[in-house]
Length: 123
Image (cartoon, rainbow, N blue to C red; front, side, top):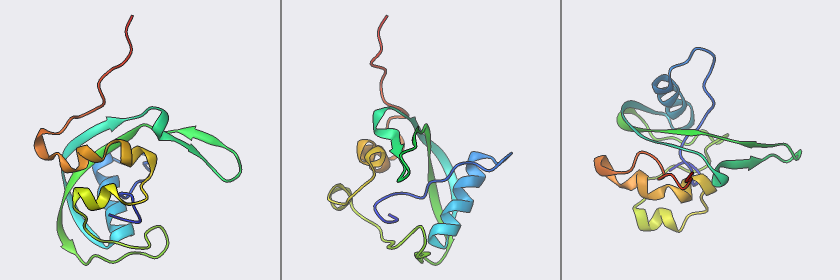
């Protein structure tokens, strides 16, 4: 887990989501990963980000499950200050971003995990 969060990045122009996952994992952690499944698509009030200048935006997050296939786990000391594996109870005690805390169960659910939050809207 990188500084209480998973690597995340906006897609570059014409970049595939799987390529962004591989690139960002490499840049932030020194690990080479192989994407293997879509964990889910998330949004909502816990995905609102307010920047120091007061600007506010809301993200839609595509979470991609990956397998580490190479590299050496190294925090880049820019976006990632600490890098380590955590059990679910350990991760629950970390200072996580709101979106990750809201969907932490998906990270640990394995192949049977939910792909998105159930709809709350009703006509």
